[in-house]
Image 1: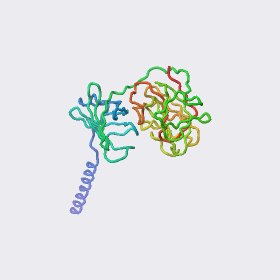
Image 2: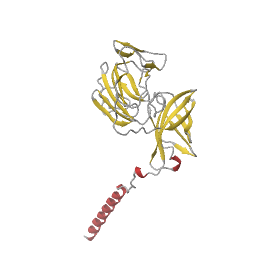
Image 3: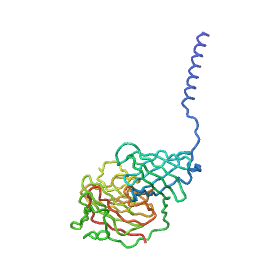
Image 4: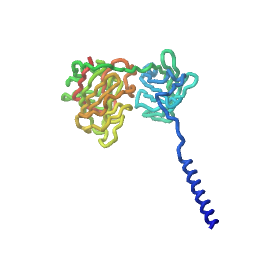
Length: 331
């Protein structure tokens, strides 16, 4: 009887020890609470962190780009980069050593193998450095801190201006000699891929009303101040909304629903831009509400974000039609 009792006691003890051991191995250790507000920016990175408007020298011609550098955790720098074309690209690691920084990004719409390599340094005038493409082409760039564009108080809206008079291209210029824009029966028509169409007048803050139509597979856009593209695209209604699809601010802001009425149908945007804050109403539905646009999108005319800019209609992708383009500037 005693042997049996001892045997059962030992077995019970082993079970308890095993259970306790199992518990201790699966119970997570307490972790230090991380509060981003208490981050201490490494001194070397202090003046590099932020948003930068870049100007790239392309064989004597300038092209716009944009860079944001952020602190991740204690001392890792990450960010986003926008080239002269395409959308915002994530930067997984910005290396900073002895006052010089560098990072690599894979190609997007450029094609080819290998990465783009961006290097630079901070000077009294801002950033300067080089961009080496995946095809080995090296271009110099300079950069200045992007403005915040904060606005205070209520906006006072001025008199509406009809950007399109229903008759001709008065008040507009083309980006190249390959003009495919014509007026047919009161409708502004981009017949096929060609030049972009740009207003001669420049604007700062405004409300823009655009009524447009695209065909199946259509792809175009409206650039606000010539720098921020609101996407026009034949996006299927059952697709999840995204910043590259109908109603998105290209590569940055996603609409909350796919509000397109579809191709071969007149769609309507009502866009309000104050500083960096944009509200987009598509076909009567508010799909982006007072959201900040971080920086320029690919295809921007320039990176001078603190200055007024034109409205420009993308014409270098596919055909598109507009029957109404009305702007109400802020007074």
